[in-house]
Image 1: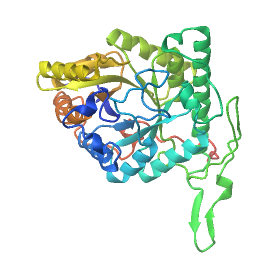
Image 2 (image 1 turned 45 degrees about the horizontal axis):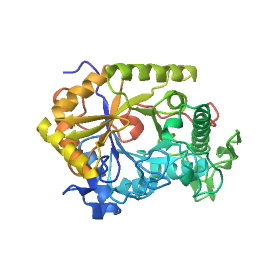
Image 3 (image 1 turned 135 degrees about the vertical axis):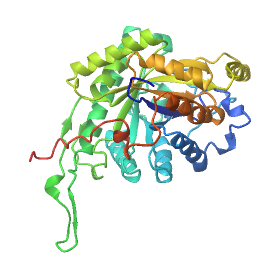
Image 4 (image 1 turned 90 degrees about the vertical axis):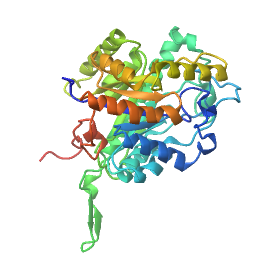
Length: 401
């Protein structure tokens, strides 16, 4: 039995899987990718495995093998459904699992995001979150015509111009999160009276202007959507370097990180904790999840073979920002428990080929972790904050009693 408290487990859902050739697998169902039933089935399987939450990938441009510009490939999945709308469609079909769609803060107004995620929290009865993402892609900016970006190749990130652009995008994302959070609080919990006898539906004194004035946004408020059931749905972000680590430490409830080994994980966690303390949040619970891409089979050789076969179909060896793991569910359990010693509180797994690897997670890895006393046997809360051990925050605008 593990001496640690149970850790948390999520899956990142993206098309047919994270390997670019996964859609060509016999069980991939490429004809169903843009149907509600496909996504409902994936989330139902994740809930069957008692996972804390699922994330839904999204973007404002077609997928590309290039990190900063579009490509011309036609042999890989291109196109997505809207992540927030997929989560809202799935919400009534599930009972416990958290639903965390991706939103691109760079081109999406925080007022729109606040009411979309608040709505998702209402329709899911308190199981909503969001994953905040930034974008420096010129082709995505051209969809909106409000701003332009200079050419930015992957290798330009460490140039002065690249660092300045990244810093600005994450500064804007921090303001975006602050506006969203204030809007969620702009209705007090008891602002809705709904008193037929007196004819009063709301107490106008319990709706608040947020009056946010910053470099990137000027938002008066209040929201048009009542305060979410969780008070504050979960805010999460993927972080690879110091600037996004600072965003996670200052603004997020969950950070997803991509360490390749325990020592690197320990250093990343320390950097995020330092950013958290510098932001005055040292007493708050902030989860740091490790991301891994996984190819799982009962025989480790079979997992390696399957990944190699997919590489052959793609025409190159697939690599990722995250560690790519091939092996058995038992070996993955060993790896996760090893990485947890570095201070990670959970893991977000990216199934290499969803049709195969999602069930390997839910029906192979989860039972293995349960046998070791490292994972739940039943859902212990009805909200995402409850599953993650986070209290419901007080409303910042409500008068102290």
